[in-house]
Image (spheres, rainbow, N blue to C red):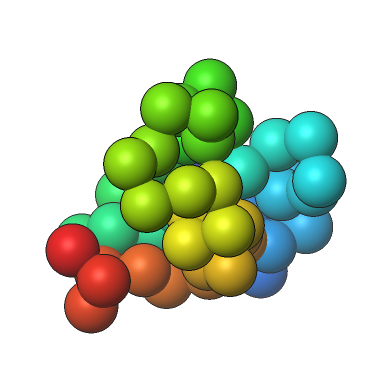
Length: 54
């Protein structure tokens, strides 16, 4: 499905971490605990465009 940036923002929450990277939406929720830099880095981009971070 195609989601707008607004839809991604609306669908993301504290319990669902969605990132937009290169115009694709990634659910990284299950990776939050494993991220080497900590979950805060991913959560700061939750529901937003994060391409520049990658």
